[in-house]
Image (cartoon, rainbow, N blue to C red; front, side, top):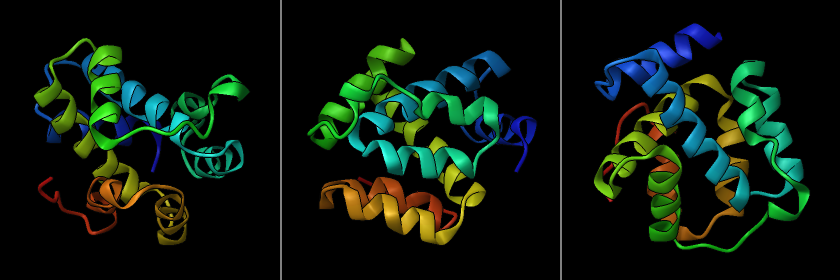
Amino acid sequence: MNYDTFVGQVQHRARLGSKGDAVAAIRSTLETLAERLTMEEARDLASQLPREIGIYLAIMPELYAQRMSLDDFFQLVAARGGVDVPGAVYHARVVMEVLGEAVSPGEIQDICAQLPEEFRSLIEAGSHGQLKRH
């Protein structure tokens, strides 16, 4: 999946008003996801994405593999994206849905293996091509 398709899918599915809003949702979700993954896993995931999107998974080394709850994850996505928490939950789910279509099933399994059970519904939303309720 190329950059324009990825961003366009997020914009359309999340019903966002602009490409910039879609990029903000992608950035806030992936930067926060990167903080939960090991550096190696974030790099593996980034390698399967368009470069312009994969860069959001490149964070300072000391920030990788942080422990956080799913609620903390959504709080951080909200703060980074400048939206309320319900909006952040919706945007993150849409981003993960598109992400799941853009990368291999094995990569989704690798991500799931690094996250607590409570993250599974968020991550697996994309791997099944549909949103799951949290």
